[in-house]
Amino acid sequence: MTNYSDPFLKDILHRTKTVAVVGVSMNPVRPSYYVARYLGLKGYHVIPVNPRHAGEQLFGQVVQESLTAIEGPVDMVDIFRRSEAVPDIVDEALAVLADLRTIWMQIGVVHAAAAAKAEACGVDVVQNLCPKIEYQRLHGELRMGGFATGVISSKL
Image 1 (cartoon, rainbow, N blue to C red):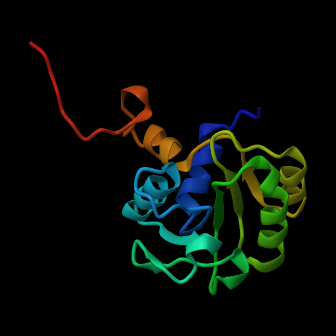
Image 2 (cartoon, rainbow, N blue to C red):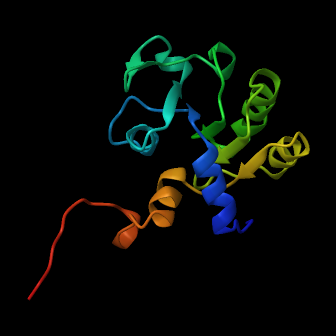
């Protein structure tokens, strides 16, 4: 796996304004749901993408069928799909998202050839990491086990 420097990740998270979350779930216990929700709470404009739920509402946004259906700029595509689906997603993103600056593949999602293709087009790529966890880690929000519980506890 590639190791990404903290400045590289911070730059991506700082410059990104709009994130298309491909493979987002409507189920609040699924990681794609709470990562998308978290990013929205942190001020990112989150565009949910899932053909199964196209036209439905999620976090005040209409779920898009595909990246092609998105109107307006997208800085980052966050991929919550299996690794074998990545090449088609990257091809679509490169073809239709003129402002694309980052392809981010979630934990467990890796595709070297698709990453190389995106990088050859000047797009930054992050594989096998979660932007929610990296945001929390880089902003001092990460708690034990990788979760920000919001619960303050102490023992005397």
